[in-house]
Length: 166
Image 1 (cartoon, one colour):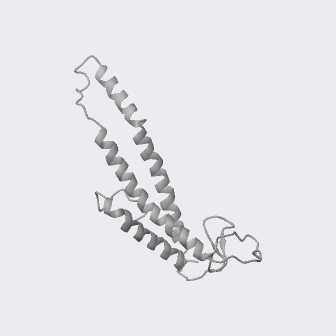
Image 2: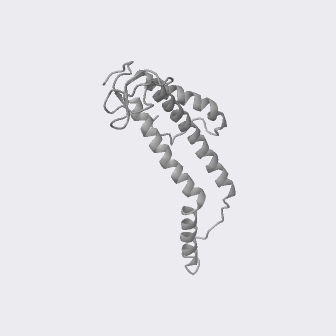
Image 3: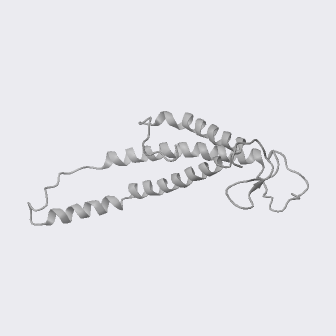
């Protein structure tokens, strides 16, 4: 579909075989799914609930990354470094060691891993929205709104210029 629609029959989610065929996931049927490729728990209500949680988690992850970054920055002590050439050459070697030490520091490695998770999650949410299924789009928007409500008040910066996908 290239236009928004409200449907639940044969909606494929992200991966082949992950297909929504029924509107609800709150009741279990005694009979097995008659369709080939039907995945247990992939009904529209269950899918919307999971998408809602992913969107809320995305908002929480953004705030968590900012909190972890602020916490790690407090512990960093900056020292003045003389310009290269004013010493016997050890200053440049010390600067390289400092960069390598900060690059491989646990806080920076954690920020890198969380950044990768945030990017992947943001692309999944974007692709889910691009199914143009109204129910899934509403789940993404509602999850982002609830996530921001729950986590956004902790943010130090209201507008994030490093934001992915919006």
